[in-house]
Every structure is written in C-alpha cells, then in structure tokens.
Length: 293
Image 1 (tube, rainbow, N blue to C red):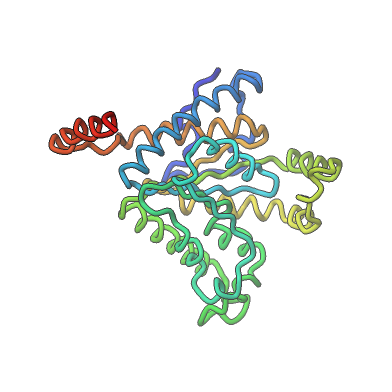
Image 2: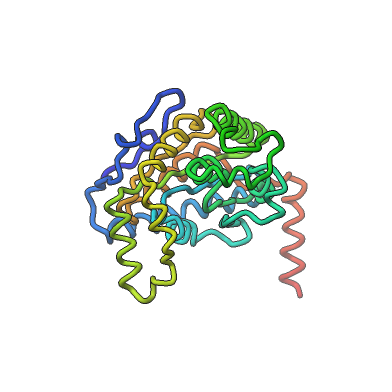
C-alpha cells in the first residue's frame, strides 16, 4: 500500500493553490478490504493517543470537516473515530443558524462548542460556512443584522477579506492557548457528486438524505469551487493548516484523514500522567487492603 504522507495533502501557507489542480482521487495501490483493515489499525492507535490526552487533560484537539454535499463527512466521522471512548470526544453538526445564534457574531456558535482540554471536538461543517454558503448567498449576511452592513453592496471584497482575517485571528487565539487544530476539506468531483445523488434517489434506505435544495446548490458548483479556493488560500496558516483530501473514494479519504491525524498527534509526545514516588508507594497498601477483604 502506498505510504500516506501528511505533506502531500497540506495546503502550504503562502503558496497559492488552484482548486482544479487538487486531486479528487488518490490511488493507494490497495483494494477496499486492505484499506479498511489498515483504517482499523490506525483508528485504534488514534484512540490510544486520545486516551492519553484525556488522562492528562491536555491539549484540546479540534477537527473541522468541510466539503460539498455528499462529500462523505458523516460517514468519515463515524468510521475514523468509532474506537474513541465517548467520554473523550464530542461531535457537533451545524445546521441553519437559530435566532439566538444570529444575534451573535458568526463564530460564536462554533466558539461555544469548542472542545475542552483533554477532548477531541469534531465540527461537521464549521465557521467556514460563513465564507462559503454566505459567499454564494450574501443575503444570509444581511440576515445577521451586522451593524453597518445594510445592503448587498456593503458585502464586497473588503468585507470578505475582513472575515478571513477574523477567522485567522480566531484560530490563532485557540492555538496559542493550547489547542491543536485540524481542518479537512473533502475535495469531491462534480461527476462523483452526481453519482452519489443518484444513489440516494435510487436506494430507499438513502432517500431520506436527499433534499431537492441540494440540486439547486449544485447549480452553483463553479461558484463554490472558487469560494473554497479562496478559503484554502486565505486561511491555511502555519498554525492551522488545511488538508485537501481526495474524496471521490470514501475508504481512501477516511484512511488519509486518519493517517494525517495519527502522524500529527504522534508529534505531541503525549503520555499518561506520571505519579510521584510517594503516590506509587501507596499502591502497595491499596493492593493489600483489597486482597485482604
């Protein structure tokens, strides 16, 4: 099986990328069974590291998942993180903002769900929705009732540059306060999205996932690709880089994400908390007390 190297998928800070140049397929040189077997091994190792992080109470690990409809976000989260103790992980799925969320800045609802130290926090769709969907449908920005933003003409290039800067600042604050941030863009081809929509329509057990509005959004495909390109170029930083994951094959995408997580988490050199010699000495008396019951 081909070796998965983190650098092959990281969007380098300061180097402009063209989204059309990013692959949506990646050949691991292995069949589906071998890929799934390898994923099981990798996710167990991730779970072991997470247990050590949970035991030590640090750091917090943020994992943001973005991608077009049908990119495989839900199934990736299910398959990559299923071995982790539920006490050490939280998953948040962001839908249409509520009136309370609209009454705050666009990052607020994401900020209040960030993981505490010692835990993994997964955001299925992220604060980037407000420079993606809102970029395509700027009326959504007007709905936020931002002071000084009164008409569509106010939502110009300068506005989006300011919002990118706010995102970079937000992420820098988190990292400087001890958070490890991962941002994964599941890069899907238009042809594969069509195939997945068709499967949803044909299969009764998948029809509940189909939404006619998704087809309408598909009509903005080129606009979304440009928006994602800007996101990658404006917000992939040295402290919170983006990883562009080829997503046309789901098992391959899951394994790539898992391997990147494992490779980077290993660099943290996490271990279980060490007891003092005095504390260790007490364990013999605890053991004897239990054995003598």
